[in-house]
Length: 435
Figure 1 (tube, helix red, strand yellow):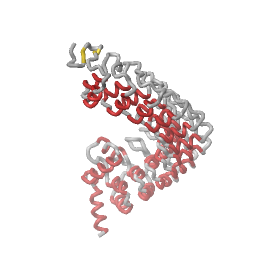
Figure 2 (cartoon, helix red, strand yellow):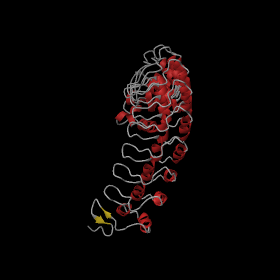
Figure 3 (cartoon, rainbow, N blue to C red):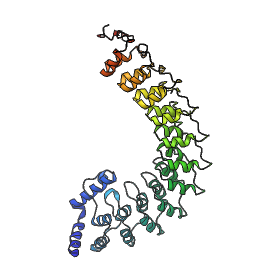
Figure 4 (cartoon, rainbow, N blue to C red):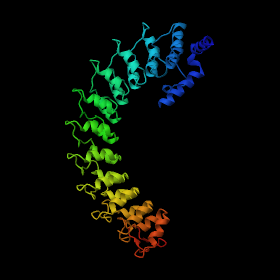
């Protein structure tokens, strides 16, 4: 029975690049890998029986295919990958060993789509056994960069958190630990920090020849900034343990670790940074001059708003330079009820403070955007007749214009509301909009 299966398999693989099963196999692979299928080609062009056997990793079949006829073991199929590249990228260690025994095999041949060698594919996908086999050879470059991203095997392994592979690459004498890639201008340490690979970060920092403050050439972010932005608490802790890490280092937009963590709602990272005495709690970015509190309020992170307001040194009414809005203004516009409640109940926050650009107030935005609960929260602290923008458009006008009928009912039930208030910028009354 097994012999019959083997015969059938060899018949299929003999002309595999013309068979529907090859196309289905590749479609399945590229779909799961999140890549466009087949390098833009139609059908499994050049995906021979040898490629198929290497892809599947069935050693007995792969050996039989090799003995079936003369093969060019360095021939490329889909996306310019050789049989060795397919086997290495999929962790088919035994097939890799078998292919490396072929006299004319090129162990360092890169594919034509990404420029990744077998070692790069294996490091990228975390196949430590294959990496070990390849590194044992003297004709494989352990510091080769791919042409698409400009990353070395160490960069890929660090990004993926593959500790064993990182350690193996450390043992190679000619690996640049601080090499910057071309895709994002990041070092292996930066890539590890960005992706939350705390084990790799520790391992790299233990080396005396790794720069922990190398900023990416594309974003101007040091490893700490990437970790804070993505909420990788353990990485942030590891980095802050070092005396040569500056916790208030800003990126190209002037955003510090605290600003990025607050903007993205990473409360544990914010807590950790606030505990330090060398972090500015009111730091503003250099793009729109927004504070951590303003960014937290703008994005509806009420837990962080509460945390920051508990600090005695945080300005609750700092305005940005884009619109001149306060944290309360941003929270009201976004309909972030939790943040609005926390800010509006403070005596040092003026809910009637208008933004500089068009004079809109938090209450006006609540009516305009139809944020009913936010409007109710602000209602008792505002003058509903004086709350209009620079064009004279009142909250009542905004509610009617946008069809927010529940808000309209609430406003019309106010005894102090003038329903015939003139919209000065357009010269019409609310009642029938008569000029």
